[in-house]
Length: 488
Image (tube, rainbow, N blue to C red):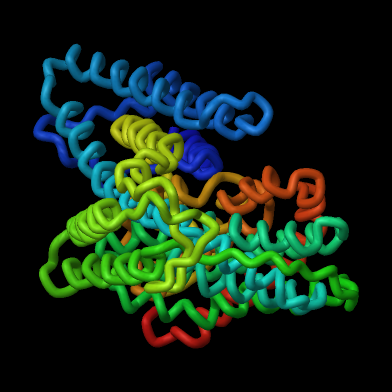
């Protein structure tokens, strides 16, 4: 019986990892009533099947054109309903309610944080900040290899501040603007941008959703993420140094098009930086949730938007230059709520569905089994000491994130809350952030660029260079273990 249960645990651990199960911290133990193990119950199997089907529909979004939030939200409702029904049969009407409320609270913090970040990005896009950067790069007349490195480094350093998805889309627009007639260049440059954006996002709390979750949980403090800077550089630069030799030295035709930023652009950039400082200060010095600082920063933008709207000059033509600020004016007045409305609502609702779905599976008891197998059994089985026992599991998290999005993968690890050193927490942060670069479907940046550069950047084109990217993945792990050995 013990052998059978051990085999079932191993199978479940792989299955749950492949489909990115997650759960806010210790939900299954947080309720007022007793925990009911449903892992061998029909409800447990049905819930697991529902999640697998829902996630399968999510992965097929490119072909079905069904928004990814829809199947997971539906599955979440059904899963919690059937779990609650079992608890009610046992006379417990409180446990499941408390677990769901805990899930929703965790989601609310993530939702509001991302909503503010998306609003600022939309505001900067409205003020032509990204268009101006793209036009400057296009006008410079760099050759293909120079553009390869410039867009790569820009993606690497922009993604910690903006986010890896927005950065990848911006740099891809540059690539398509200057080299659309060279399919090989576009394909390689897009691969490089995906790797660079994911690597850059790994060493900043704001660079990726996974690092944001780790920071909000308080597992790693704000400055701790910057210990991953050198491993992140290696993760990006090593594959890029190899891929560059496949590019020609030719120079694409330059463009003379000039795009100027609109009035208020520089101030909005400054307010965004001020918002980040506010969020960090609230968390580090006042011990308040970072989301409170972000919402305060949204008020900065709201008041400045009010100023832009009141000082708007309708007669100023969009092609004319505002002599006071040296920027292009605009006909339509600035409206902050339009920027909020343009947030990625499908993505935000997808996070809700994922958190609630895997919350139900955690309440059933599956995640406890996975935690036992990965973070308790694997290390000793390989003869590793306590300090290094979590290393195989953390490396595997990165490999699985190449198949499944890294966000639910990191939710899973945070939910298991294994007893790990700071070095191990940074290791899983690194692997979850950069592991998705090995396949084009492994990260939001890769999926987005397949649509933006359709026919030029493809799944199999990326797969061809997967061994080179994997080399960077392995090297970044070794560099982290070497340079940060004192915190393991």
